[in-house]
Length: 332
Image 1 (spheres, rainbow, N blue to C red):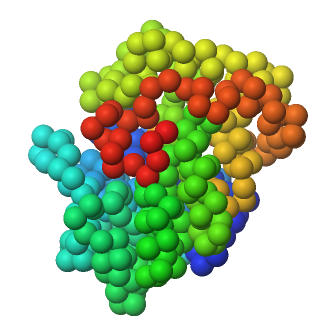
Image 2: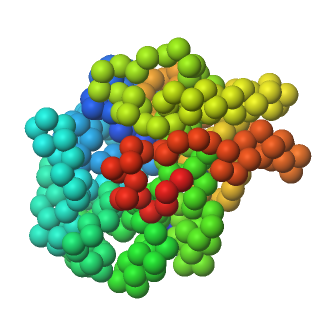
């Protein structure tokens, strides 16, 4: 497994990270607990060290699941990235984001307990709390670093101006944000800002929640509770159009001798050594498909063919339901 340093001040991590969100209910339907744990084990055995979660994934379920999967492993053999701040209701509803300093300390205490660890490697607000200056939120995380409970500060889905303000309080290790062939809004302003400041990027949604994995089809029904059923890119004519882009990618992948998923993961990784793709594999089968993407070398001609298949801005539909778009660092 290749490794990189995450940003100028961050830890060394695997070139590919594992996103654990889909291993909890309320996102993509009902996952298999045993298979989820087996997938975490397979990732670790393959050399994946960066594991990303959120305290609100399954209302704490995801952290408890990871605690079970990681039990007995040396603490320095993996890097935990944890998002906090999203407020949930008992009916799975969303209640905004809380970035107050007292909330930071409270969320952290619960995460440490659920994960069964004495520190979080990278701690980040999941979204910006518009009622709390980012300086206050980052300042509270800095206090937790000084106290030994956190190692690094990360951000998630914020714009370039917010990144600069946060970085002035404490060095930011990385920004976690959606980045894929069909979600390239980071390229205009956010990515140049990260590179200017020496901040890494952990890219989630590299397969666009399975849409550009090569495994989705127009006749596939989403399971009850599957978030994708509410997402514009998976709906109606938007879906038909977007799957047409996937078929264009499939021709490139076939010529390259790889799967569509491997091609699009490799494309994200090829955008810079400061970018670490997060793969939300819920099964060992999907993980096994993703891992060889790191071995793909994309030539300038390959990249040109990929861009021809999926030009900038080619996808149709927003990446989140309209009510959630206002909370994102970049719209597309």
